[in-house]
Length: 543
Image 1: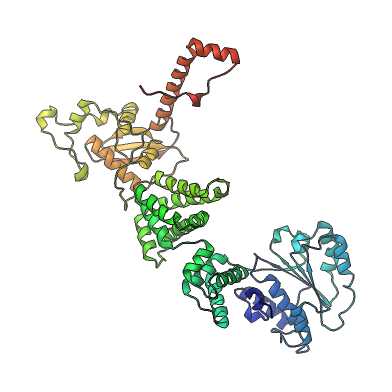
Image 2: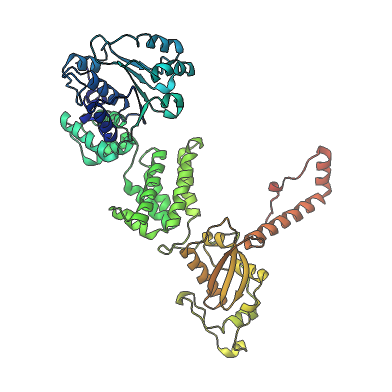
């Protein structure tokens, strides 16, 4: 006897054997029990969740010869049940709409509707993938579907119910099948392996159930492949090799290094992963899954995985969402990248580039933005005056106290003289990490009074997290020599440090462009060929 795949060998023959569709089965059983049957049923759902199987079992229930009425559970022993199972019952017509889409096929099918069934209660038409029918075929079906003879019933199945005309849907009882939870898929696979006397481990079952993505048939197909790959047994390492997945511990190590802004550690962790010759896209999907678990635990505290709990406690929730979006964006563009490995590496580099200092994680070395962190010395008189103000900053950033006689004054006047120009100069001299510098460079100076700094942000920008505020306040407090409080308002921003830098860069570019145009040789070339100078091509050459 030839080998039969598990999906066909263990196809459910009764409602009790169907997995994960209790809401559909309950409706059908109640309809049969109370003899309140609709003339047309529409089964919709994703692939491999039981649409066609439930329709066939329902057909057996309606025509089962065990009793005088339709049965809630078919006997699977009478002639009708056996013939419907084998697909040769004369009153059960199963049609593949994908191969018979024309209106002539539909007319031929409906010619037999008027004749009563010879050896069954109902003449049942099962139309699979009904969304593939042409518009003319649907129109030909409408009248019969709305007022069929009492002995006729239509069962239709589709994976794309949105493509079925509303005129057809309104004539059907719609039953939407759900995707199957991983736990139920895992339990079902385990029961089949026990029946087949095949050795397995729990990790293998979990991997297959996860890869099935809610489809029983996909899970059983993967199970067949895993059994063949493992030579009749399931082992976690063999299943991982088949599916192209890796142990989550490798990903956890990678995420830990990214969270700690440890570029060298992240590169080594990624190198370990690439040495396993795995699918890079699959690695990226696991990274997304890890950030998803971290985010869930930060909100629900529901994870039992110690590594996930540790990461959730050490990463700011907003940073988690940032990394999740970076990974998700990388996945959406993964197939257009010429080199999958480079796509994965660039995703990790983006995470490191946009890694702020959160409250729970401090990087080994402070990173500076090369554009925004240009040192600009504070005037000496301001430094001297700032030394007189009592300090309340942390010890590691507290400036050395100077004798009062050196300052020559009892109180500092520097804070009251802060204006927008001096603020932009002070901001560029702050010792900030790259992310914090980028965030606060978009804020405009409003005022400084009574040790309170007021900044303004545009309405489109979100408020910075407490971790970002803490680092910023520590840096500005150390610079001004006193403990500073911060107020952030919303409004139109015009002269933020970032805007000033962009304006200065544009002015410098215009000057360089004017200098080039003054060159006789360059001017002659432009005039001769009708050319122009492209701004992006102008580069400053270091002396």
